[in-house]
Length: 408
Image (cartoon, rainbow, N blue to C red; front, side, top):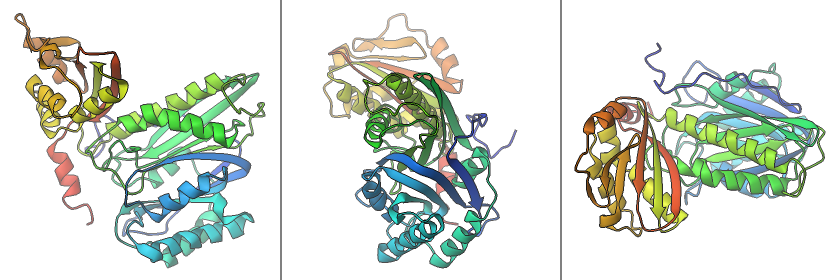
């Protein structure tokens, strides 16, 4: 077993090619490393695009420009730079992005605003324009590559390549979805993934694609947390080439719209879980299920309070059934709660019900559950019908090891 690979890793799936999508990679050498770090995706004319982005008040230029670009709903290319976030870099960062857009647009003979750019890595270092220019020249001439190659190239501290796939029947046409994501740290629910890209051959109006992606984001990417820190660069983009030949989807009234929405949601959920499974230093994947809250939003907030608690996360890392820490996290969430109605459980075994420990509580099954790598925490507030599910990982010394010398 590779000691550098997360023990929660999943094998890279067998993902279908998407007609109208061509992947290429190259070495721009943004960092002193011996690996590809520039990804280029060429998209067929007529491709629709939608996106969700970080809510950080200090976003990168790529995020600011991407927000504007998705409003037009059209895309011809995607460029992803790894090793340099190009965030907090002022006018020099913007000039680098505009240079990349112009260079690719000239190659494709398209509007520069149809070229989407993402960057990830160290914050505060302007993207070197000379390396970007040479990298683009190399990548547009490179041979097509696989999904796994592209997934590895967009990564930074990730320990394994992450991909997901699904399909749906839209009328008489089968449509495919293939997606890649990178993310391992600086993950928190303000659209919580580092960088994710979803590609489909479905024909779908950009407005409807945006509606579906935004809805899925609420229940997937915005329900994960590794360390409570929100990135400057978080981006998920969905591209639809329309090459499947289905009647274009414009609303839920269209035949097959429900099936496509379910497939898109499935892909988003898979990607979100993969990011948590590669949480920096993670050894346990944790699902927190909150029920009986005053509202769904309240349940979501309480779930995140538990998921982001260092005390809860370290207790689970230590396989300690310390349910008192969960009570603490519920109490500090700032949401309606009643101590005398609160119930806490692990792995399907209740430790406390309605505000007090169970008289016949047997910690043995809980202790056995916590020794595994897949952990569930159940919290019932007992005051309403609100519910939510969030996902996180444990907090180990490995997180410190990775982040104490990240820039070097």
